[in-house]
Length: 145
Image 1 (tube, helix red, strand yellow):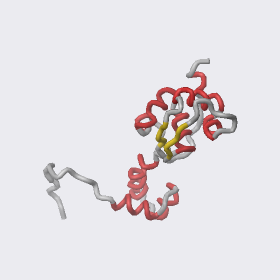
Image 2 (cartoon, rainbow, N blue to C red):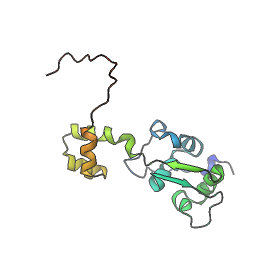
Image 3 (tube, helix red, strand yellow):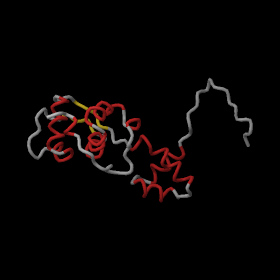
C-alpha cells in the first residue's frame, strides 16, 4: 500500500495549532512532508511537549494508534524505527502574535488567557516581554517621547 494512501484528510484539532508547513516546528517538518500535515498536527495535539520513543510495531491499543489511527500509526512507527523524537506543543510558535492581535482588538488580558487556554500570568509575561534588539544597530527612532 502506498504511503500517500495512508494519509487521510482531517480537520485541525485546535485553533492554537499551526496549519501551514512554514508554521510547523523544525523537529516535525520531515514528518509533515512525509506523512502530511494532519499527522504532524495530531502528534502535536496528543503528544505535544514530550520526548517520545514510539515502538517500531505498536501493539493494539497503543497511544499512537489512538492518536493517528491504526494504518497511519503503523506507517509512522515503521518509519521512525524506535527513534526518539521531540514533539513540540507548538503553542509558543504563535502565542506572542496571537496575544498582540487580541490586545489590538481590545480584549483584556484575562479574556485573552481564556480564549487561548493559557494562564493570565503567562499572557502578562509574554505581553510585557521587551523586544530584544542588537545593540550594534543604530537607533533610528527619531520620534521618542
